[in-house]
Length: 399
Image (tube, rainbow, N blue to C red; front, side, top):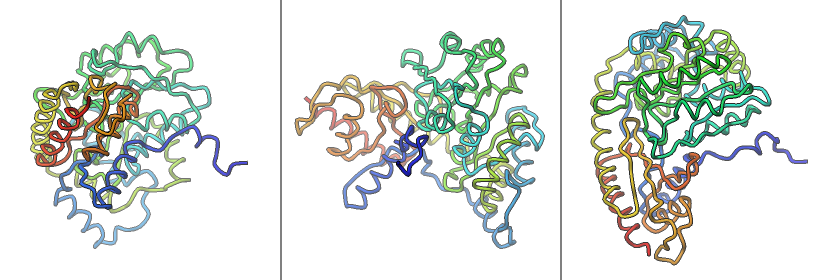
């Protein structure tokens, strides 16, 4: 009899974390590697947020807090939703966890039963299906092609809904593609959801502030007729460069929030009191730096997209948000690298790219769509220039 549980055997380690770890190991071993696998801003946490954390430590704000978040942080979250999204929530409709992933895990563990189904558009964030599997339910993946800009259509959504469908996961701006749903596209999906009131919606808005040009973010929770079916998740990791602080939050039905608190009370208990104090300042403090940093991301996006599209065999859509691109490598599948190894798929492509030219990216199959790879451009322009040159040289070396 195995000591490892059967439920754990259903899932795999996070591919994105694995790629980042591999790049770190190679660097530590003296290899010249550029890591483009991590979904982490290269900017530092703003000083006012760090100062708030230091003050909390000095003030002795180092004890247990309420299981699912302090009153001060929940109030800051409620103000954020009202100020930026015109959404009104009471404090008993808000939960705080140790990162967005933790909040999503709590949600699925609190609401899913065996036989339930969760619709997940692909390409998807790597953890969605595995969290659903851990909760004992079934992920139902809908492939969203490059031709439809990697976005779910109302027609495809309607075709997959049945009596077992409990959740739809909607992520905009998207990880891994950077695709953003317009208000009209979200309203089109909502028409299907209005006809299926048994389906709940997880709206993962973690990249809300990182959008480009004239794109205007719109959350499905802003549609009044289905707001009560929407669980809106967000956090401070991406917009405020606070990935290591581990604060995610969400708002939704108070019954679900109460159930999540029960789970959290028997697992992690409260998120770090210091991180919560810092998150209060992040949400309530000056927001001007977000737009400045988004402009820097936009410059990097434009450079990366243009560079990739100049490489024979690579094709890349220009995304409207987040800090990822999801280029196709289908044009080089079937070729051989300089060592004679055949590139049979996207996994072979990223492995050979890392081994031969020292660039770490993530295979598209990890996100549910073969023939692509994800690049995070949340790094310096100098590193991106070097990386794009290496990718170009690698592709030109294939025969």
